[in-house]
Amino acid sequence: MSFNELLRDLDVSASVQAAGIRRGYGGPPARQVSIRSGMARLRCASLLKPLYAWVSAGRVTEERWRRHAEPAVVISSNTDTLNLWLAVGPGVILDDIRRRTGVAWSPPNGDPSRFGSVEVAADEVATAYAALAQAGAAGDPAAATVMEWMRQVEGAQTFGAREATRSPEAAVKCGWYGAPDETCLRTHAVTVLPRGGTRTTVAVALTALPYTGPRERAVYQEQVNQGLSVEAEHEKVAGAQLRGLLAATLAELGHSSGGDA
Image (cartoon, rainbow, N blue to C red; front, side, top):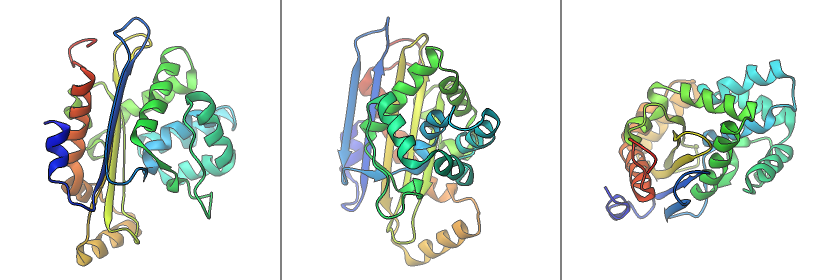
């Protein structure tokens, strides 16, 4: 399905973005694609957790880094992410991301301890993950470890991203949330596809789709407050859209699951 088809029937209050990068020494010319409908920047806290984990390495002890970074990536633990975020410092983490990837993000207004309030665009996320993937392939041990953890993400937390990209070995990170003051559910995904050497292909999809039924929203918030799983609700609202955006992005990049295209 094309981007036009995916965006054609979107609700006027919805926001979606998708972006992709294909690049690497020894491969075809670099290619980048992005589309946007709705808001220019979105919150997608969980999608940034592997990047936070990467730049936190070396700023805390090895034992502490692994204890918190692995669950932050593999099971999207907010508690462990917050531990690293506060121990290293929001400004330090975001400045390190800027230095390593060229992508500049700002601490959220008001309370910088809220790591989940950083707002980003899909093309920025794709750029940052391409840098992470290439660093890992070139021998950065922390980057390589984070990429391996992303390959361990499984089950409902993937929203079918590997199936959508036809790459069972893809490194994946997804995120989901709907704040009490929002009338949408935010669901997002990044996939990094293996291509060999320092070549990498990254696809990113961000969605914020209407979720306005008062009863549904109340039940959702109750589940969140009780620590219950809400992935199924995000799958119902955004799963098909998310997978469609990832697949369309890879098609635009000319990626083939069978080779280096």
